[in-house]
Length: 339
Image 1 (cartoon, one colour):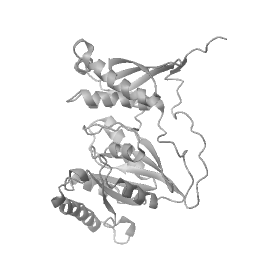
Image 2 (image 1 turned 120 degrees about the vertical axis):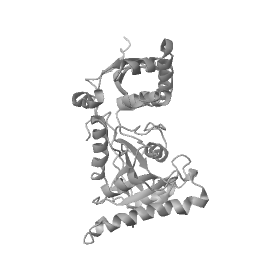
Image 3 (image 1 turned 90 degrees about the vertical axis):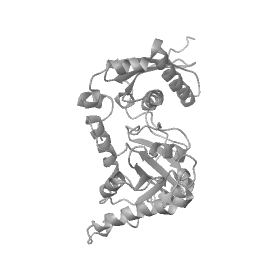
Image 4 (image 1 turned 135 degrees about the vertical axis):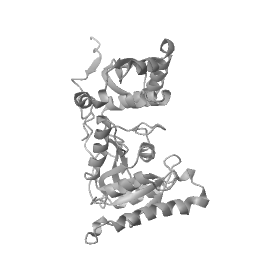
């Protein structure tokens, strides 16, 4: 009998929704399920918290701000609830069309979920950026909780002072609320210290979020951790390595497009293109004698092999596409529609 040939997936053939998941199983009485939006300024730890709660790497992380570009869904199932966690781009003042679409995506998530988790850097006092988001959530009809992240970095002697700055921020915001609309009051939002890095306070956070979800069935199979397409995950793993190995203006000027995935039963081959805006950025990514691109590829391949639980061959190309972050057609092609 002839051996079956390799399975090859091109961009045009890959469904944007990803592979279908099996039907969820029956949930017990009193089970709760729903969607939770992780909202906050850039670099407050939303993606790190998502990975911590889910228990697996479903979102890339980096010390650089504005790492997250897509609304990623992580799925956490406990004995009594299923939380579908939306990791949104950090809300910031945009400087180009890509930034505008990322902020639009984050703001759009607020009106589409059952619970909003406002994540702040609890190791620093409340700032203007936090205040802007609090005002943005003024008309949210979904319950809002505030997670004071990075509690592991807080000096115990300052913990009370830092928490008080956020309570004061909420109280000041209440002064601008419509007295006739009790839904605009924010001083009642719970403040929950936690650490996405160590896991401290995370069980209590999950319990508080689950208690505010509506009664409902499993929305996904209990063992699911994400519903994002395979192609998107692979592209993000490559971009994470670019963020890790490069500096200055290069990371935010980079996008990754997975062109082809080929599986022959023994290993999986991935062909991807890294887009940059200038020739100088291409030179930095390739590096002397191709060393930088080799390091990026090696790091991404190691992460991909964990995803596929087997060997992966990764081939990377770098392409200059001037001003792609300001080109509506190019942004749509890359999946940045601001939806």
